Length: 130
Image 1 (cartoon, rainbow, N blue to C red):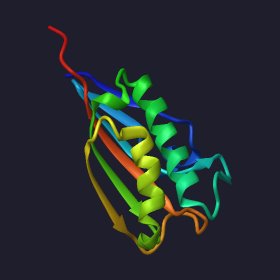
Image 2 (cartoon, rainbow, N blue to C red):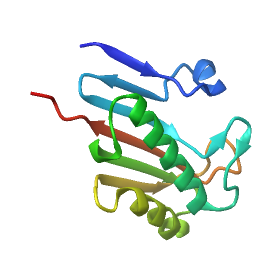
Image 3 (spheres, helix red, strand yellow):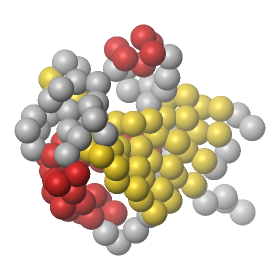
Image 4 (tube, rainbow, N blue to C red):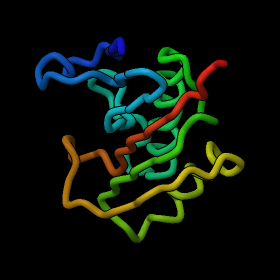
């Protein structure tokens, strides 16, 4: 099967050696995605806005991979303050309320930048065309 690596152009990708997303066959894996645009944190101090921005970035990379949000079967959400779960969950529900992938939300001690509160991963399975 052919492998398609998709870059977002983030400086971290080349430093760390990863892709924003990888598609092999009909499976698309999306790396942990945060609400950063270059050096700017979008929604600093607001987990809802950070989750919305990260999910929009995930949606955009899925399109580049030939998938949509409707192909997502799993999400993983990492939050630095689990007491804010409802805010992160509300953003997730706005993107996935009708799709309802399986998901996990866990609290972590920190993310790569102190202003980041949410990081989200996704797995999509694109239907095979017959």
